[in-house]
Length: 227
Image (cartoon, rainbow, N blue to C red; front, side, top):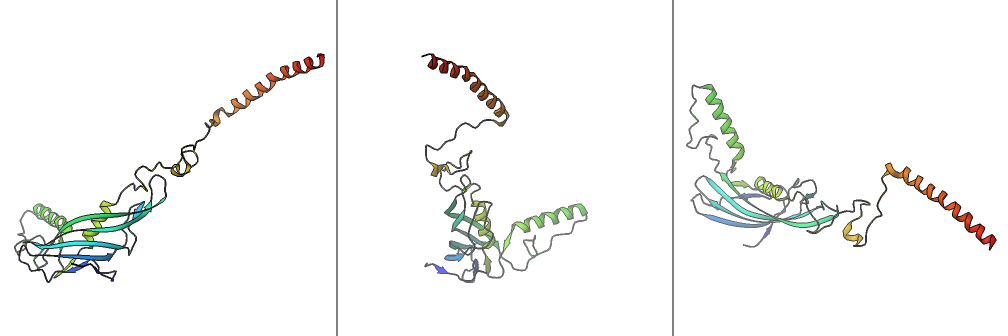
């Protein structure tokens, strides 16, 4: 199927599943180039907002809903974690998410009936908390519409590198002057720095050397005169 460009920044990751029957096993595939949503980032690397993302996804009808499986390829920008130089790269993130049919049944119920209200209040609250936790993890269709953005966002953010590198063998920065070692060359170096705590002794040692050399200078002067 040829790629289609979705220009609308909102709803670019919303798919209409009306052409997919609810018969288990039916499937359809989509390829789109969509604008990247905002806030796909970590501290040093991010996906530029609105950048073209190549999206390939397959929707398959199952008993509970629609299973979305696919991948997205997005450009990256940021800074190298070692030398802080600007970097550009490409990231491909895969995802698989089940979207449950939204048919009006109460959440936490699979057969259309509301959960039985037990006499034990503690058991009631425990079940209520478990239902809320499960609902937070579940994704649902909105009628025939499937919003892929949350699943895509989670996949991309989890795939972003914590310590991005401009290249695998980046040597980083010089600990003395902060210069990028990749640009400084193999001859880059610094003389051993003197610990400030010993600077006074070094100065005193220099004064002693200067004083010790004075008799030699006088002797040489006398020798020259006598000669």
